[in-house]
Length: 161
Image (cartoon, rainbow, N blue to C red):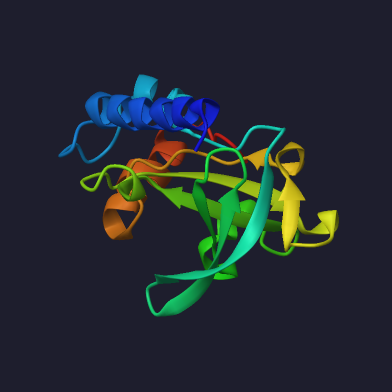
């Protein structure tokens, strides 16, 4: 890993720590201000990166999902199944998530991005093809609903769609 990679990984770690501090570990739902600025914590590959499919898989529930790797930072991105991509129109888009517990074990958050299926090959794609997703304070279950989905209804602001 070169110095630039280390700097980008340090930046991601710093963002995760700030998200944990800003939202809190036990809070159920973010404040309006924290919700409106959630994407300040989202770490997506930059436009110079190439994202390539690896031979790894990660299980989401019982489903094995493909893992991709960012060429600049080495960050792992998991291609999510269609039923976990409903807010991003899975007929037209693919959703990828990087789980923050890969960096900080106690983190329950994740970054996400989407790309259009119209881009063609899903073996590799450029960072410039990415449409930004949204940052999730909680990745799983009912806590995800309260922290990341319900605030969209309450605050009438959908970010990253």
